[in-house]
Image (cartoon, rainbow, N blue to C red):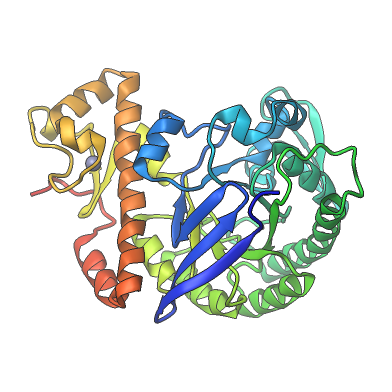
Length: 389
Ligand SMILES: [Zn+2]
């Protein structure tokens, strides 16, 4: 049997934690950022490139993989690791967020969600139990419970209903997960035993609902906990406020995962509030739209001012793109629609995110996170920068 789930906090600086997460397919140094490989691939880059960038864990989307190619096919292939060639840890989300945002005519009942596939219109049902089974077949290292994320803005009634339902689903998901782990459902193929399961805290922007959700979810007893339902359109100060209120209430000895966040400064601000794990499509999606993240802020490579700018995107960046290519060339590739543009821009953005996390981890170890945070936020601008000097 492979390494069991384990988490150790090795250093603290204020609320910030430097940890080490052991999973069946390897160790993840935290705080960590998980690049998003929606359909079992991080768009535009290869597994080798992700390894060279120092990525230690990827996120894959249960909704997309369930619809195509299907969890049974992936189980027959030996699980996601064998299927994709990525040997290190993988976290699969629950599919809940995609069901509510991508599928058409999603209908939620106490049992689960009936929806039509965005690919072919076929009807599907996801329940707290079937989502556990799908992720067991995928063979990820971490499976997320099926939750109901209310859209933003949500009334108190809507946020409370989604939070309460998520709690009831938490119990069902945990029971099913434990049944699979104990071998009680041999009909479900489990290519990678030892999978951990994370619970999800909901409650929108209502702090008392977050409190109830934390208490109820922790009482169910998951391997670790995530904060869901943020970064869905609320003001960033509200998000920081809810994270700062919620994260310290989660068990000290378990990793805390802030789902779907965020901009580079959000990562720094959330680590300061006690978060250990992140995922977000921004570095990869924005790369494909020509936006490069730098220490000073985002740079839009399609801007005409870069047409004859022969400097690298960021002179101090050590990524494979900045070491070799100029803004002028990257702009040319982008406006010409060359596939290489997506690859080179993605390599730079992921390097920037992963390198920011390396800097965060080092600063916590040295007890200088406060200084790191102040310097980062002073230099970084959320607004598009016109030019890097
Ligand atoms: Zn770079």
